[in-house]
Amino acid sequence: IHVKAVNALGQATSTPLLLEPMESAKFDPPKVMKVQAEPNRYGCLRLSWGLSEQQAWVTTVTLEVRLKTANSKQWSEEPVPVPRLMRQRPMEVCRLLHGTEYHIQIRVRYHQSPWSEWSNSNTAVTLERAPTGRLDSWMKVSREQRQKSLSVHLFWKPSKQFRANGKILYYVVSRQRQPLKKGQLCVTLDSHCVFQLP
Image (cartoon, rainbow, N blue to C red; front, side, top):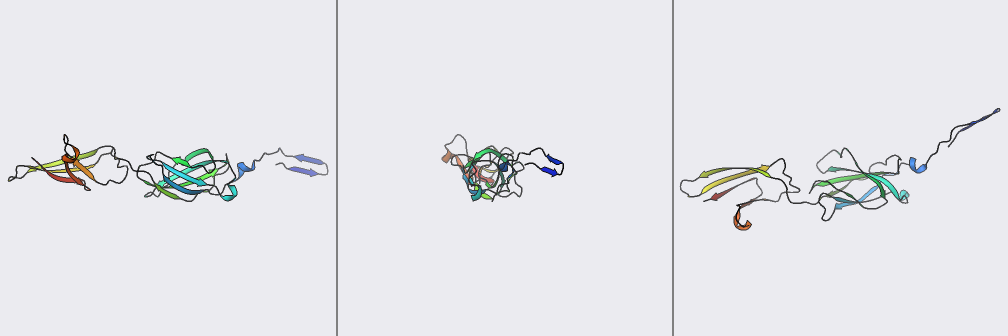
């Protein structure tokens, strides 16, 4: 692009500006078609997406992903950049919490063009995995005069390092040095249990 000014005495021309149309175009919002948990990959979601019909011919774009958990009102502060992604190819988002529902949106641009608006939101739940970390526990022991056994009240709560990694179905309290089934003292949904010991 350049500008030329002309009068009776001659003309003057501006320095040409090189404009790459694709570098200036703002894309339509992309579509998130499907989000699902990655099989056998904990903390990962697989995302299928596409460009609008008019822009489906573009082969390579830069993509950003933003997420929020189902109970959050705030999107992630830093969108996850995905540089130079091939058109329509599914992508993975990892390092997520286990057994958690996420809302996901994406946006695209071509090289340094302006970002598109954010796409529609789609939802998926990451795979659950076994709990990790420790529980803090304490107990109260009392002896009934008529009985020859002790009544044990055991209580617990998650420590700071504990991660549920999904929905806790139940707690199993068992004695050590016993096979699991024989050593079981109680199975409960509560964070306490009462049992008798000799």
